[in-house]
Amino acid sequence: MKIQVLGTGCMKCNKLYAEVEKAIAQTGVSAKLSKVEKVEEIVKLGAAFTPGLAIDGVLKSQGKVPKPEQIAAWINEAADE
Image (cartoon, rainbow, N blue to C red; front, side):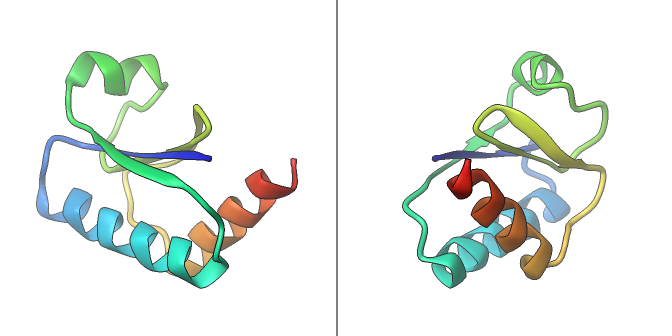
């Protein structure tokens, strides 16, 4: 599974990255977590606002930091597909 945090390095982007790390640990799912900081790449993934979260190329959130429980639910949902 490929999980991407979209953002240019702002405080909220860093918080989202940390929350995703927690959610991955919580679920036990094997995932590769990365940051996407180039605006062109962020736009290609469909995000108009940062921070954003994409799982396997699907935009799940933008403009906010979802709770770890919500992130974990998205991870489990993607793992079941």
